[in-house]
Structure formats: structure tokens, C-alpha cells
Figure 1 (tube, rainbow, N blue to C red):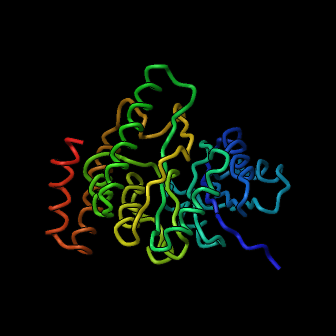
Figure 2 (figure 1 turned 180 degrees about the vertical axis):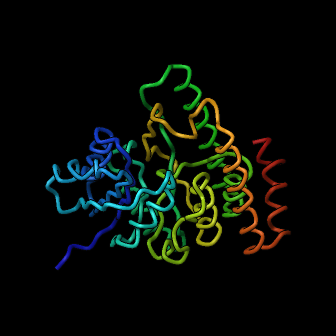
Length: 275
């Protein structure tokens, strides 16, 4: 008989074996909860397979996928249907989960049975310049202040407005959700290479409710190549960002109506701007 799983951690990876080992270790070190890690390898040479095998831990499984062409949404969607946990965490392969975080999140989910999403504060770290690290620290400190304000309002719509129109109050690895909510949503939009986490979590928050856990739950690595920290965006990146935002906006208007969409946009650009 299999042990019930609290948290299924879906971890896409692409040629970062050293960082991957640290990320997996941070999950396995979580106390007071049962975890499983599904490592979804996006590299054609199966570079992560040796890392997974080295743990010799049945809680960690390896999944080889077809190269996605840089679409993390597709890699995550291949892996998450295999998750057995009550809650699912999409963790990047170069980030770290602090000790005790999963137990704290589980307690929130138990206490708040009507909430589908829990997300946390983000602490940046990494091999980057002091100036960049300071900039990122200030950025995520502002994100936490905005999230705290939305929490005080007690409205899931406030969180959605902030995420879609004002500020990236979270990154993908900062959030967790109930597996049944994930099943209902059908996962990430596979057509999105960029802003796929904004699209996904704005849909999840609006439909299932959200709670901001005001403690650091993600150590977010700065310095690895990523769009969020790129000093210059390519024309392709800029075009895909615009297309992703348009797709997310159009979906929201279809599902919740144009009136609510524009009301949230106005709220984000007035009151949230002042905050």
C-alpha cells in the first residue's frame, strides 16, 4: 500500500544538474509532510537522469519528455497528471524551499478549506551583482506589501487585478494549489511560452480563492539565464509577451465578463498604484 502524499513537486529541468540536486534536496528535507518529486527533463540528452538516480529515493522519479522548445508550460503539463499529492507545487530546478515551509502551507490549506491557492514571500539570492540583488530584493519586498494589502481586503479579485495589471506579486514556484483545482483548470496554457504563470495563477486565484502566507517560502535564484532577469529582451520575447497578455486578457473577459475585467484594470491602476 502506497503512503499518502501531501505534496507533489513538479520540477521541470534543463541542463542544470548542480542546481537541480540542491532543489530536490530542499524538498526531501521538509519535515512533517509526505512528498514526492517528479523531475521532468526537457533536455534531449536526458541530462537530469543521473542526478535523480543518485538520490536512490523512491520519492523522486524521473520523466523524460520531448524537447518543448522552451515552453515550460508544456513540460509541466506532461508531468502533473502523474502527481498523487493533495497539493501540487511547480518548483523551478534552481530554486530552494526553506525548511518547514510545506508544513506551514499544509496547515493553511487545512484551516482554509475553501481556498485553492496559497503563495508566499520570495527571497532572492544568487551569483549576481550586489546592485542586481538589491534591486530584486526591493522588487519582491514591494510584491509582498501589495499581497498583504490584497489579503487585508479579503478579495480574490484584488489579487487577480494586481497580478494581471499591476505587479508580479509571485513567481511560479511561490505558489501551491490543491490538486483537484489543478485538474479543473486543466494545467497551464500550452500555447504560452512567457507569462504562463501569470495566466495560470490568475485563473486559479479567481476561480478557487487565494491566501497569502506572509513568510519566506521560496529562495529564488538570481543569475541563471531567465527572461525575468534579462537586461534586454529580444523582439521575439517582446512579441510573445504581448501575445501572452492579450490571450490571458481575452480569456478573462470570456469567462468573467468585460465589465469585471475593466473594473479590475481600473482598480489596479488607481488604488493599487497608490499602495
